[in-house]
Amino acid sequence: MSPAALIFDVDGTLAETEELHRAAFNAAFADAGLGWHWTRDLYRRLLKVTGGKERIAAWCVEIRTPLPPARIAALHADKTRRYSGMMATGRIALRPGVARLMAEARTRGVALAVATTTTRANVEALTRAVWSATAAEIFEVVAAGDEVAAKKPAPDVYRLALERLGIAADAALAFEDSRNGLLSARGAGLRTIVTPSVYTSGEDFSGAFVLLPDLADYHPFAAGKVVPAS
Ligand code: XBP
Ligand code: MG
Image 1 (cartoon, helix red, strand yellow):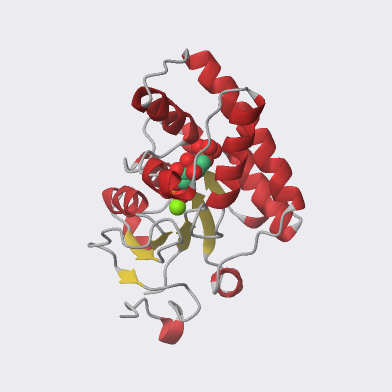
Image 2: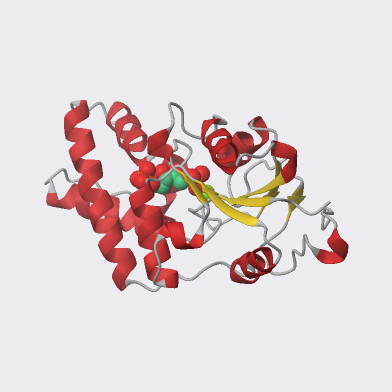
């Protein structure tokens, strides 16, 4: 049976955005005079903590430098502003197959949704940069990390997306790039197609419905069926 909705993770799945997030974190840290710099290797490890605010808080614990929650929130707000600016002037492209899959879904009346750890502001920044459109013009539903009690790997954000779509989990497909995302989608009962990204390659993706390098060769609407491509 053809799915009624496709629910996409954003960071690492729609586009390789994490280098932009990392640059925005580092710029915010430098401006605040903190003397912190997250290298690629360090960021790969820190990404296991989902959510920017939570990641900064975990870092503070790691380096035994306590910061009050309000300071972390202000740092993160500055990081989000910088990320939007960098997104607007950068050259972020969708990952292979994403645009084609979304277009095929639209043609068939299949709903498009987002379930992301990042904020709605960052989803808007991406849709403006890629489609020159608002998130609401591209996605029927956006469920964001700042709207749920528990971020990925908890299932909350996928459950929220399903609730807003008004459909059951078996009527949708989820698209993820990380183990945390896979656990979240699976926790909500979703079949999950995983395309590892630069920062998540090598993670444990057991339980994925389909595991592919990218979506270029993924055709869920072929012959009107959803079949695992591998
Ligand atoms: C992505 C994240 C996000 C971004 C930063 O996880 O963990 O935290 O790195 O975004 P996923 P914010 O792709 O699994 O949703 O700083 O806005 O939280
Ligand atoms: Mg992701």
